[in-house]
Image 1: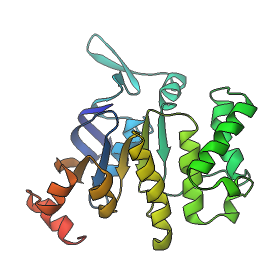
Image 2 (image 1 turned 180 degrees about the vertical axis):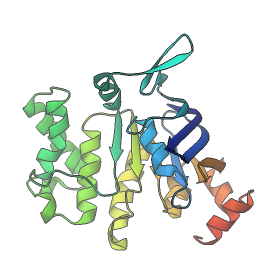
Image 3 (image 1 turned 90 degrees about the vertical axis):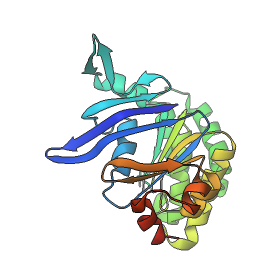
Image 4 (image 1 turned 60 degrees about the horizontal axis):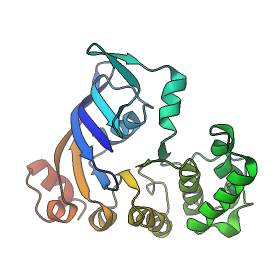
Length: 250
């Protein structure tokens, strides 16, 4: 579902990604862990072309992300074509990014109606199902300011699912939440994993990674230092840098 081949990303002289190579199969959950500044969130944003790669190639479901290749050269897609590609990739951010002037239900139906041209009745019916799926059917008419952080993040997940994505990206979805609200968001994500959604999750929640992920990758300095089966990697990391990082968390 996702194939990264020596992906690099620089911001001016700052090299954030230095050749990331990863593969994620359909239905798998990949958790990315590592210190701040290691390139995790930047890599996530490259997957749906919110950031342009500086070198290397990224594929989602066999399609080159953000570019077209002709005679061995890459040409960036027209913004409209890139946006169409992005429809199939749902993303949940750290800070929810809900429309404050729209209810939970209105937040969820916005993209299907405006982008996919789904009828309002059909989008509303699907949105109510999704809000029920994330445990918020009773909050359909509430505005973001009337919801807790955990509830807002669950609305954000429902909003991403409304576009029926083939891939879900989560950028530290619980880091802005009070500890007591983290569990309700992780519970929704666990259900998605059980239903076979392909997911890439940037997280510091090691318990979630151990329980749900198929692959755990530790990043530092813009590269994947070590990756493998989560329980094995957490119990017996091979690289000194991984050992040092995990020793502070576990």
